[in-house]
Image (tube, rainbow, N blue to C red; front, side):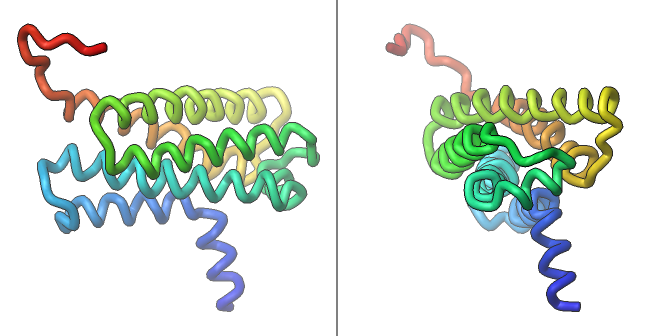
Length: 167
């Protein structure tokens, strides 16, 4: 029973981290306006920690990760895993940095995650791959998190000061 609960939690970790991010935002655990707080938690938890977690899975447990997605094990998993790690670590750092750093992180994560979502849809349509790791929680989080992050990034953008030049 405990083992099944742990396995369920780990398979659905991005959704749990998303819920925790919503809760932390609602509770006001960090100071500041709601969009700023939400972007912080979104970058840290469902984008950052989920990316790190996915990277660990692809790099160190490729057979398990491939099976969950409905794939065969592939040497490309190392590359995907390293990209997941890079995006996850960058998002975790960005959660506590400037708007520009956050923008760069959201841009990279959004291209990667929305690209993943397109790949998931392609697999569903062409290969009938409705494995939980392809058509379940990861697919929905690959769409929800970047779209929300882009919206929050726009909402947190400060008006440019007149005469300011950015190099």
